Length: 117
Image (cartoon, rainbow, N blue to C red; front, side, top):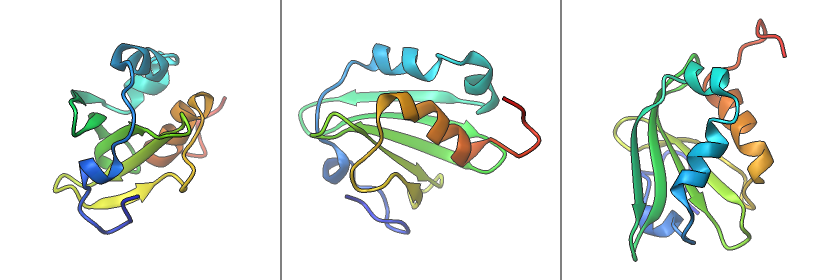
């Protein structure tokens, strides 16, 4: 697994193939939250060497990229990087479940205490 302050290595992080349209559908499950990220610049790479989803975000806490990979446990590994690819945040070693994905990303890039559920 890539570590904080390293430049992201796609081949090291990449693991299993996934359906990008299902991932986008999951990310957009709460459209207001998704829009608040200022997400664009979507890239999907499901080639033999790399299997990843990347989006550019412009949130309150993080401006840069979010990389999402599916690991061998069918959990998501998520990395937050600067524009140059330096990792500034990531999920724990095991990854996160699909029902935690949007909340985890939102907490890291946008959510502030003034927001109400």
